[in-house]
Length: 262
Image 1: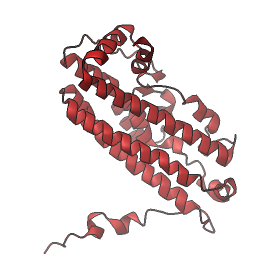
Image 2 (image 1 turned 60 degrees about the vertical axis):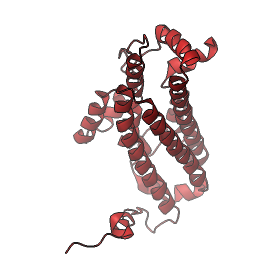
Image 3 (image 1 turned 90 degrees about the horizontal axis):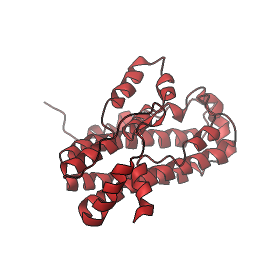
Image 4 (image 1 turned 135 degrees about the horizontal axis):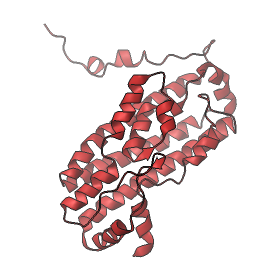
């Protein structure tokens, strides 16, 4: 006879609550918060990737309202991700440093799911592949993602299916955004924004996501600065100095360029 389904066994609550394993000895109180925050980030990254895997086929098939609904869900998740930084900032530098040394080389820089998100957004960096050289299965996961359509490529296919004279972006860069802005596409986007409210709404949702991602990066870097200052990251990165380089890098530059053309 099969076991009846309950809240606890459906959500694997017992297993879930065993996953928080502090490394500090004796255990430092604030390490539990640190672990739970970052584990919850990974869960939300998983959900965003799940939504991206639905969004891109919906865009390619021209399903605008399903795409709009998915984008709104992603934006709501992104707001939650930003708000979690408020919780992390209740931890003082002294409290974080009480267990930081126990983290050894573990670093948020090594988050594979966040790198998957960046790749789908069109970002490329050989370094984020190389950092997993001792874990070939993780490298392959990221390399496989690089072969998939980016959000912007899927959106361009959506507009082409709608009859717009959009050119598919060419992948030209190995570092940073994989494609360059297109003046041709910007001209088409300006006319589309003036005449097609449904497609224009989707454009604005993409801008919302781009802005939200930049806000998350900014809040993240300021949190790191107030916690460890100019120290190097636990994984050997330049810490806040590295994070500063990631700010103000839009993933939909064409949608930002057209702001001055109306």
